[in-house]
Image (cartoon, rainbow, N blue to C red; front, side, top):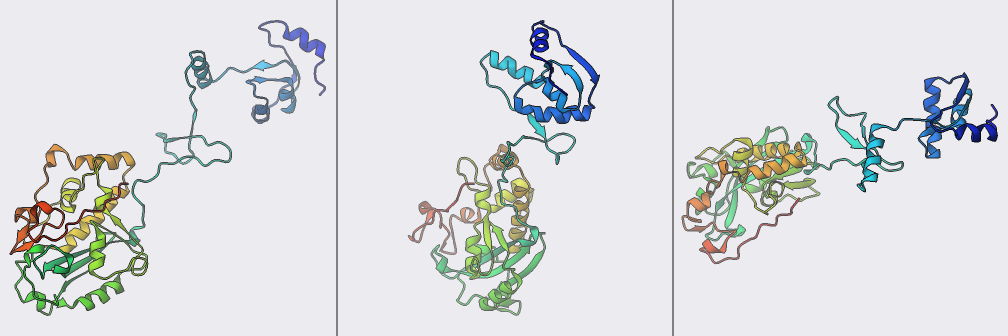
Length: 347
């Protein structure tokens, strides 16, 4: 259809408040919507003659105005007031009926998504290893400790293996791991195996794709002579995960008591308990949003649970049977050896 003459366009457009349309055959709603999308490049909120013609109308139409949307009207008010305009949010196709909205991405850009505050792993890849030690020397150094038991738990909370280990040197104190309830011969009996055998059996059970989660897991896999990238893939330190904004670090037992409602039983220490709650704490943190994780960290210092229960080392005055237990503080050290500062990386 030929466009209207300049005479008609100038004459009729000069009449204020008049919309002029001489329809012969109007396009369908679908055709109008399609044409409106093509006309968006004209940067106008009105229908021009060319737009109607593209939609298949045989009509003479002069810039038929469209009513601005509620959002557009709001932005117009903001602009007149000198305020910043807002970006309209589009509902995602993957959201539920309650409506989790995300900003509409520009062409060529990916929509922004909330990053998970804790790495997400398949539970089949998650494991926790806990190793308990006895004292074979009187300082707090690692060389004066020897593994006496360990437990390996998978990401579903099942115990994969648990073993007693025969120390290769005389034991000065079994109380470091609350093993005083064991008879002296049990660590040398048929239930216990050599460290070499324990390491071999552990490596046979642990997949190379495994991710070890726990409280300072470097110490545990170090005792069992495991190599990252060879015997397992990587580690996740729960001490880092639950460090709060003030840099406060909390023990595994305090985390379990506050966040899981679980207390370790007194008497003989069970390394599988530490490994199980480590897996539970990881799952709780990995399933939490950034806001929920911050709330978990804050809960660790809430009045209901503060101050934390004393550790075994503090209860015993940082020494047991003449063995120094003050590895992380020089104020209570009785052996004079260098102390250690935890290397916590903030997330």
